[in-house]
Length: 552
Image (cartoon, one colour):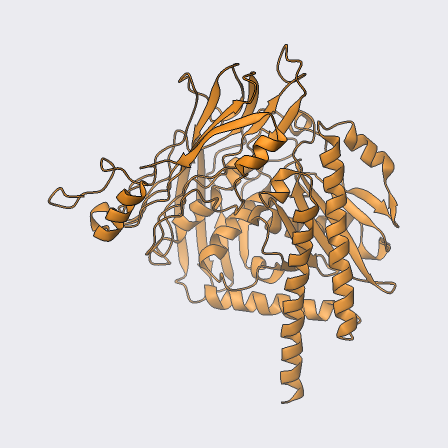
């Protein structure tokens, strides 16, 4: 075996080790986090970067929005804090939506790695902190100033010394200071663990720097992604999607252009900035739009700076997908998580139908609040909890859509036991929503029905971030739309999909999440699949597709 072959083997081993290191980093974040959104739902990201700020490897654990937006944010940190200005023990952080991952609840922490006295890499991690003050997590703000505490890129630790003043400011501005402080230590700890493992790896392989290995990783990934893109027909394709919005519907318009140099996505024609907090900073738009491409093009190619470079995303400044400061952005995921479905619609023709139908897409994320200071007249202990739930995914080429699955975010639903043990709430129902998946040769995934009440019968508030209430997920290739979402009180009073409302004492809130659209004509559905749908209760006899003879 020649030296070249040995070098390739060593490079592959180093690559595999990097993947193991960043996954360990993410798991430490999960296991040490205070917020339920991180430790139970996996709303986080973790990765390793070279000294130029290019992401080399990311953890599998985490969300595309966090990972791909964080890939850009490290470069912003280095513009303010160049590598040569950093020292061992330094830890940087920000939650600035335009330099981080799109809203104030996400804190990004960056830690330089030193081999002896030389900076050789950086680790970054992001997690969603349940509360950052202001109006709280939700879409009701008019400007980012109302949405909570905004921390500019700063030192959390400087040469190992905690920035106590910064931590004091955070503590007095949030509703749950214990969790906020604990999550910041968790972010710093997972980066430190990653740095320690990386240094051990470099010493094991006799490496004095990581940049050369980083160049190999980035260059190989870029070429591998271009090779996959060049297998596709070249040209341009357009798609649009209309969703609920806050006050009025929002149009998301995309043109995808495939060429020898990569894939360009242009969101010209998309609705303008909204007057409430569903606007999206460009980095978050780029994160989820590029993920839409990566789902079906080069999905075996590592996700890093190389593969992301050849998927270029633009949106006109002032549209809802490129909202300038100081637009309100707290619920930016309501719009951003729709983008993969918009992009997949563009790719339906060039990929010869190998894309799924539209799904519920956006997480159904209620924030429950109650007690003294939250509800007029209440003397109970105040509480705030952020939970995540999912609707159905769209029917896939050759397969049904996944039931109650958070695509594209990948975030897990918050367990009933966690919600009931951390807040005075009781969940009376959590069950599949029959017939909610769109009919088709391949059925859309079904949503779920959940019922929430105060354990003591008191009134409570809920800040709702739900879409697909007025505009259900559409089917493809003859498949039917999924059922729209519904939200209402136990007395039958309808509630808005977006915004904070109070659930009166003695009543509960019922949420029915949307089902995914179907793919292919319903009459072509396999008979055994129809029988299994009926047996499982996911489809009722009334909702089952029929053949030409009228039989289910």
